[in-house]
Image (cartoon, each protein chain N blue to C red):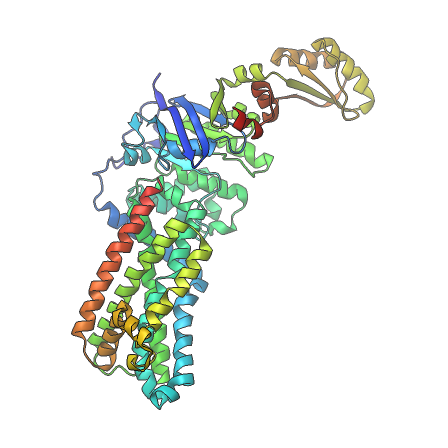
Length: 319
Length: 278
């Protein structure tokens, strides 16, 4: 399988700070790579290098078979970028924003207009097409931003924390869109601070911290490494919490906790054990309002991988 | 190649068409600069407040100087208006190319708009050139307002229409080439306060350290020597010659030469600094 992009040994320093300290990133064509890390880990710097906005101090980057430093202009024709803050022009309407991108990508104006119309429709923005982007909600702006990055039909799409600041409903809506893009064959690199997001979207996850890769694995593999999946059971009748705790304890072999009154939580080994819990509850006739399998948070993953909390800068000088 | 987009829905993995190559369209710098100028122009027209520095300030100076000092300096406000107006024309174009131009660039950098544009196959120079070209409409509006107020106050062109247009063109040329200094400052410092300060203060020694408000002979000797070498002084002399009569060839040539030098030096420096950001 050929790589859609491949970065080797990326190093970038800003003055005395080392933002990237030998980072490798790669993704197969049509796959989604999640780059997971806390604020300041180097995620944005890496994206800026891969999208030709920044030159690395060392290392080699190939995007769609082209070296980014030597063939920057050709790389720019093949990529799409949606930044951390939605960088659409607030004084322009949705249509004007997309038509501008089309013209800058050398589409003839009628073609640019049609493309803009198609994308606005696809992202549910047709009604807002003639309104200035400054009147858009956060979610609409994000969608317009994403649409703008697709005007040139990119082969590789770079999304820097695409769902930051969105409420959960909008977030899962955007996830769906990103997944459908990947299904169409676009390779996607997305950075995120949420394991949940990387797990929902990515075929592979690279975890970076302080400019270094500390793990690269499939979501399943990473979760296994990080451990700590938790089953959460909330009985409809809080009085049944004890019964629920018994079931959970019996299935998992570990005592269940009841941190908030009626809710029962316990670590589980995986999907199967979770299913056993669900069946056990049914068997014991415990009616539930909520049964969920929770992933470890980024903090927990980091703690497992590095032995210290995410974004802990103190150990940096020591290492 | 033309049906690249129509084929999008049927694209399958690994079977994408080649994106249009570099040779598919000509004159990328001109086309992209114009597309970006079009954008900046829309922004200006939708935020008319941004025109205030270029439009209102020169008119305020014109009214203030004519009615406050006109009688004292020239004996009559009417005579002074004829003397002052050509200089205010230059002040207008120099101011037009300063604050707003630099500010829009700094804002685009901070909002990430430039990063977005830099990730597209767009010549770096086009991104800056687009911002500066969009000033054309600001020059136009500023000049129309200035001439409107001037005529209402009683100013009259003493030469002919062609000379008056030449005076405007010369002044706009100077404003345009000086605006690259602001662009350079915006790109290097990326700071709105600095851009505003420099853009506001720079015109004063340049435009007022001349014979704009009073004959140079009446000034202290140090100021006279500055006025002698100050390139904007030549532009004002040329403007006076073209609007109210007097020598034109010498000062106009000097103005054109200086404008060329400013454009070459500041323009090259700004584009180079902008490319370096990569």
